[in-house]
Length: 202
Image 1 (cartoon, rainbow, N blue to C red):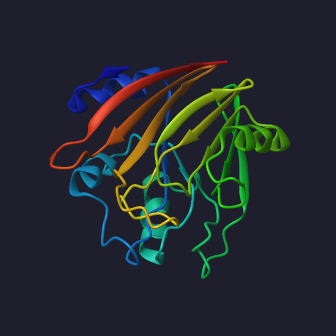
Image 2: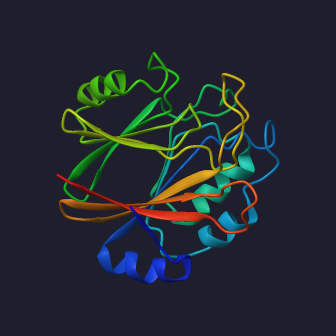
């Protein structure tokens, strides 16, 4: 893992390939008032070409903000709290040489279980499965599948009532059979997010 200087990221990422935002579990305004200010600044860019959201947006304003980031290429799936929205339960799309699937994650039990998630990825026929619900960021490779959870962008408490949640999201740079994931976490007491780089290869 490499800690990156945030200011240099977008230039290097866009050289690598298409930028995909992985984000979700806002629960705004029900559980958290807003996205951290430092995240808002980072996401105020025209460099992002696709948005993948794991659901639980919380409000129409969040939905519109997500659609404003990448226009037509915004995929949002339904979370367990998205009662007033008409989002699909799953979504499958192509990113570079990879098939990528998205599901909120409350449908998969035990919640966050990597074996269950890998089986679900197999059912969807995808190489990468992006899910949420636990609100905890994670990257796991299992059985030839990459299981990615961008966490909660607001740091909202999860369905288990756990409040020790670190706000997080991810950016994915894709070029053919290579994927570079940049994880952003805003640790307690920090003004700027901690950024780490992870490389996935098919």
